[in-house]
Image 1 (cartoon, helix red, strand yellow):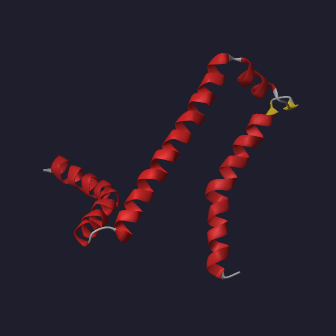
Image 2 (cartoon, rainbow, N blue to C red; image 1 turned 90 degrees about the vertical axis):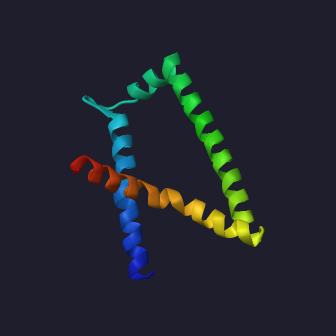
Image 3 (cartoon, rainbow, N blue to C red; image 1 turned 45 degrees about the vertical axis):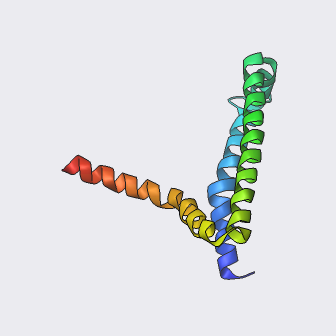
Length: 112
């Protein structure tokens, strides 16, 4: 494995796995030690159960829509008409450019 691969794995472990493991540890250890009372409370109250179901439905729908739209954009960008390819490539890059530009613009307007 290369140095870049090791570095990327360490970054993944630091910023993704470590917080997940920390939350898991807090959820199974209470003030008295090992406990599953938090899970019991979560699964026995209808409010939390409905919240879990709604979150899963939202996640599935969002993933499905994003994959569908992403596939259509990728297909048109690679196989579509030439005039549409350029326009789509620019439109797809706008979300990457817009947030820093809008933030900088707001700082300029605020200081003026």
